[in-house]
View: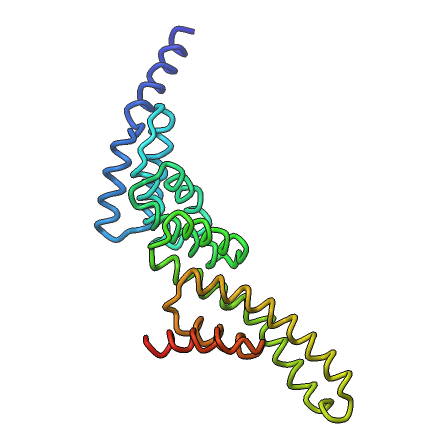
Length: 226
């Protein structure tokens, strides 16, 4: 029994010797990052986080570093919890954590989470251009669906203008309902980034489709001044 007990103690002592500390994992991650071995850097940063957490220590920078290296290593699914934590802990570059988190969702084809993250990031950091630009484009794509549908209805209804005016009127009402839906979304895109040319073009077009000529002229003037 004494020999078994001694063997167990020896084994546990050996494991303790080989166990890495949070600081050691952090150093390993830094070295891997410098060597552009991003998968290893990400792995070591996550290990550093876990080790520090087991010691009751929260290092905000490590969550951000894990986010960055996860992005460079294309570990899009795995990086999301670290980006989320960096945001929650209000890291000094939380705006970039929002951006990377959004990109990760985009790469994973999670469109709903992508838009939600951009919206949250824009609300928290309205002056951060990379987020506002992505958000404006996301809204633009969303608004194009009802806009194109409305335009298609108008085109198909044109043959009814003279022969069946009442039916034509009903079709135009349907088209305008789609244009109105698109208008609301395009205006959100404009609020996110009023300097995005395609947003201004689309907003001008939808205002014209709804015969809102004064607003169309204003947005077109802004477009021409860019």
